[in-house]
Length: 205
Image 1 (tube, rainbow, N blue to C red):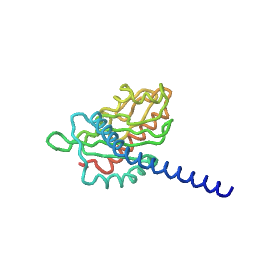
Image 2 (cartoon, rainbow, N blue to C red):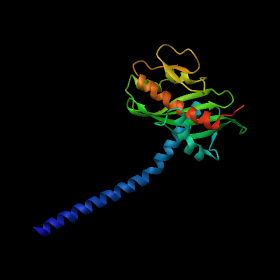
Image 3 (tube, rainbow, N blue to C red):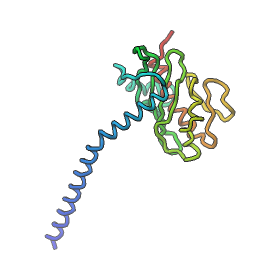
Image 4 (cartoon, helix red, strand yellow):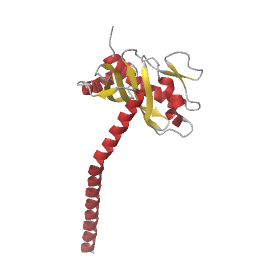
């Protein structure tokens, strides 16, 4: 009986070990393709939010991201994160603005990750898109539709609020009907990127 028990334990150990090694191997094999696919999707999103621009990593990009928590704290957005920032340049390499990806955890279904572009010449938003979400179909998921996304183009980089009464200035967008939680989370994510722009990147006259 004792030998049988030991054999069963040994068999279970071997099975667990093989499964663990196999899973680690699969994760290692798929990690790079997944990362490349995510990078490609993010770059395509940047091309949408800042049309006709080229993008490059800045020498101080890592420092900007590390310091972003202080910028978010100043705007009461500590729950959010700014995940990426690149310089946007014209074809001659001249700086014309920045692109960001940022995340709010406050969506109805959890994290909402967005990408936005900001012109450092006009201090206006050049474009907006949703990178990922888990919002309700027909409600919060409408944040991915052009009718909602296009509202951000030309809005002030000073900050964005949502309203249920019709946007009346360049700091407001119309909330999604029946999805104010999603609307709030989107504005949080956008404002997180704008906080980094205003506190760390904006050129002071």
